[in-house]
Image (cartoon, rainbow, N blue to C red; front, side):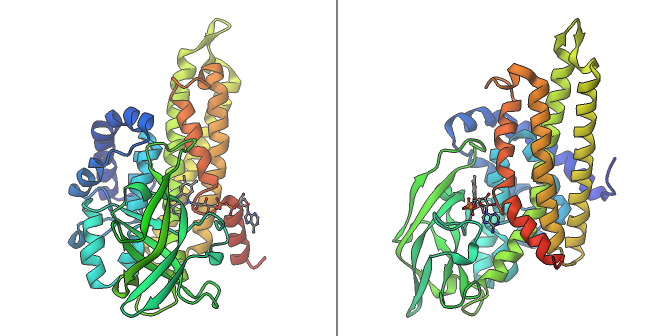
Length: 380
Ligand SMILES: Cc1cc2nc3c(=O)[nH]c(=O)nc-3n(C[C@H](O)[C@H](O)[C@H](O)COP(=O)(O)OP(=O)(O)OC[C@H]3O[C@@H](n4cnc5c(N)ncnc54)[C@H](O)[C@@H]3O)c2cc1C
């Protein structure tokens, strides 16, 4: 089924699938073992317009739509979720605020090089003591002449240890809960900005995740995204809505990878003199997985299409993230069960998807937060 995709979308899928197999798959084992992202991929993907496929060609992007970005993430996630995580942080979180709200100068200096893969970006909202309740962030930016002095700590930041710049959320006016927040672009090497630790994770090991510290870090006023103090929360919400749709593709990619591996295993594994795929229970589980994946993919594309049409999709984006991330947990549990004891062994690929996919009900807004958003939109 082609899900009503355009010809461009279908051609893009073939190209990115081919790229992922040829250029990414051979790098996965080393990246996972060492917990090091193969940085050359940023440039390689940027050169081909694969890195940020939905931004205009004039900015170095692929000139595609939101569905194109979803296809990119889905195909990369099938190959390796950690590598996909780092690349999707670049195509979304670390570029969207500048693309949508940045100045021409910021676009030239940060966005275009990021789209081309010449600069690596990160997005810092979460803090050691503040995750879901984002309006409670403690990082502050105080105006001093032509600079803002930033103080605070950001936690769990994807690409943090390898970034050339990070978009940091900070209060310019802490008396105005939520609305007093602004986003600032902070360059690597700015005095007072350090990567205090690289974090060891259970999964998504090829993505580098870190804790970032800002200590009397002076950032030029022109690095504030948006013209005025305040309004950063709207920029964050705009970025997260888009990201939640992309997350649908991420979950679909991992689900598809788990299905493919499980079908193959079930055909090869023989018990009671028959391949285990011949047992009705195995077939039932696999058909249920296939059904779930089809719905996940269709719904993700449907909401991506609405997003491209400029429709308000706050509720639907949260629904995509909630449904696909939660459904994926069932898919991964079934897949592990069908793999039996071998699935629990590190040498079988299914364990990686199981570890990687566990993240998705947590990051970029937990399932509970998606339920809160949906409930609010429904007026409940
Ligand atoms: C690998 C990884 C990469 C990440 N990358 C980034 C990044 O690049 N940039 C960034 O800014 N952040 C990033 N994050 C942070 C991520 O977005 C947060 O982990 C997430 O938002 C949840 O916040 P928390 O971990 O502090 O959990 P908490 O907010 O402490 O939540 C803990 C539990 O309490 C529940 N809970 C909280 N409030 C409520 C409520 N009102 N009602 C019901 N339940 C509630 C949550 O759902 C959760 O189950 C990353 C996290 C991870 C693990």
